[in-house]
Length: 379
Image 1 (spheres, rainbow, N blue to C red):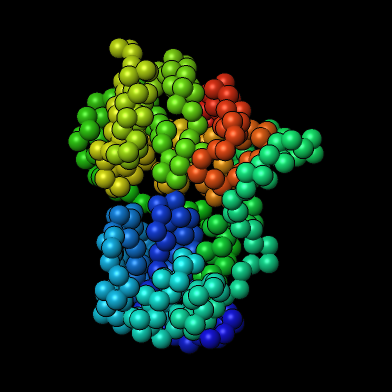
Image 2: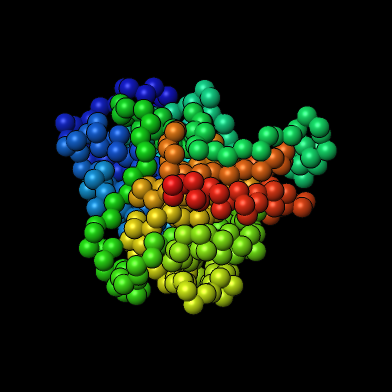
């Protein structure tokens, strides 16, 4: 085991296994690293080990030759058996968990690279130190939140991010790891791919083929927790105002758990003059991609679909509260397609699932700011 980033040996056309991440947004943010890996090893066979729920994300992706998926509940031994059959030369482990390193160790892959983290280093043949400027997402304690909101020096100026892209962004963490294989660490935009025929099939399936109005997407949920969700009454007010000013057709996206929320919004914005389709819980991942791609814009919380839309080239407008656009925002620097909004709450970002005080970070983002941001993107 060592921490060098340039001493591994490989065949001319190696067989590379990449252990992918477990969450949709994180998976999208790995695409620049995967593309740089493909650039470095143009003749390699690159397989991605991914949760079953994310397998279809990688269809038609030029960085990947093969996906190997695993279902919830599969143990490390069954997963290692699947990997072993591929006779891989190298493994790049993107997650920081001990389990992900154990999987490739049990599979007997000769060279295994990943970040140095507790309880897993001995399962890797080459460990990579964190970047010098690495900043971790740390949950604030309730006591720290109260100190910040009561301190006059803790005030953060209200701002709108076109995208203030930080060198600490999660994309760069994955690129730094790929650079241990000799890949170029320079930043690329996340990219996903959807075929035109998939778009047409999805439109037909959900009755969107004959819509003549501009199609806008609305994604009001967030799987991580309520602290990431802009209030529903604000979504309703913004959607109504945007509809009146643009004559748009709203498509509501979300998971099955968001259906009650999207039904509430759909009922509140219903107007005979406009079209609204509530598709929460009804689309597959590929269908979600196929409908995000032709959307003029997506108004959304900080969620996986936010990253998917941006990676497909669809502009996003996002109220940020408990999380940080500098660390996990969509897109790249100076990408004027997107608008990322923050309030002046000094306790933001707290990275908590639920707000322990008065939710000032999200309540501080007004309907007017969001409407203006949408209209500016469209113009």
